[in-house]
Image (cartoon, rainbow, N blue to C red; front, side, top):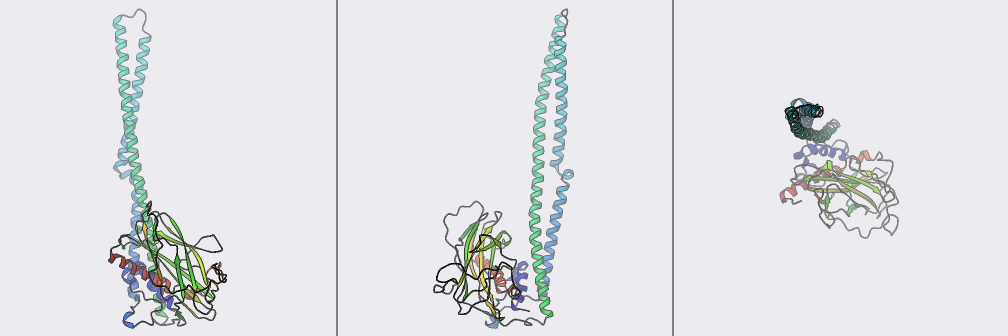
Length: 429
């Protein structure tokens, strides 16, 4: 099993088990003293994480189903539903009373108008009194009807609001179920890979020793704001530079956005999204599910390629902290491979939707980058995009060797360290 695939086991487990997340080992940590290298999660630990993720998913699904059942039974169980029905009945009764009263007025008027000329004063007085009483009763019935109708409308609105609130609650529970399912799938995948590794001969069985750290393969982000408002999109640039003296046949840029709320305890990764486009195309494409952009093929010695990135933060995201990680891996036709030994993390704050942070600076990298000022763009002395284009055909077979590279492992691990550091410092984001 390739070293990058081995690391993916820890990555997937980290999604659901924060304690395990901190034990992810960098891909190129072989040169570190043994005392500084932490072990990756065992199969037993991953089984425990998978079981916990399954339980969380089952609980989320049960809560969603219970909410749906509660909504369906509101007509029978809700006090507001009963109040609405009672108010409708009262309004119908008031309407009936008004109808009878109006008919009484018509009859009383007819009695007055049809009195014979020979009618006595007493008969006239009696008819007039009956008309006045009928008209007064009609006015009272009309007021009662208006009041009953208003109560019916009020009761109907209250019940409707209750149903809307219940429906919204179902929507939130559905999101929680989807997130729990993603976590469960990640934990299951981590366990499956760990078992596959175990079957292939243990921790070191089948590792690819041809992949090496390459500090001169650099990734630099520019233009990412240090504050991003929820509900907005920001565009920025990623420059991938081959600072070595040899051409890299295929380079795979890695980008990953990690975010939490202010407490650092609740992940918001599902609310932040990354897309990319090449300098020659205005079409935005989603970063793949392994956090890689399509390959640059080739990237000549001393050359660089510029890639446009777009970060979208959902409007529902609360205020919190974020970091965009970048790195690069390469694969040569002769089988040699390697990548950035570390991730560059560009930290930003997430402001609640509707916030107006004003003018903000660019996010700064969390590690020192080598000086690349003397490197030339691939197309010559100009700063134009690399002539070796981003492949439009998707990942090659080489991607299976690199797809679960240190980038993915370190993105998750570095994300955890970021959260812990923020938490200790007392984030104000």
